[in-house]
Image (cartoon, rainbow, N blue to C red; front, side, top):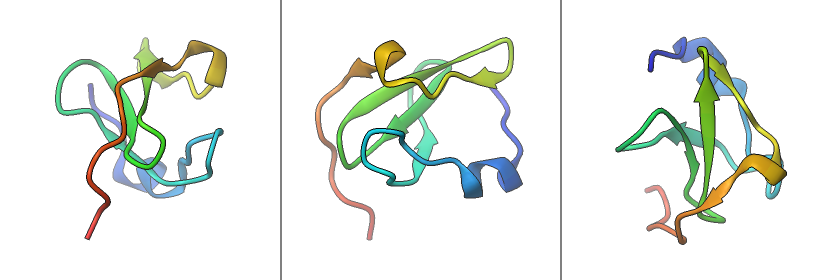
Length: 62
């Protein structure tokens, strides 16, 4: 999965408005604050809370 860095700078989690980052595993984006994984389908991030999968909260970014 390759998402342009400029796009990543403006994407935010729709649940908490925190920045999303590429997930360590799988094709998707992850919100570290609320612990949701958002899939990327055909190169398009699906930032819908209904489509998100809980993965558990992560350590906050430094």
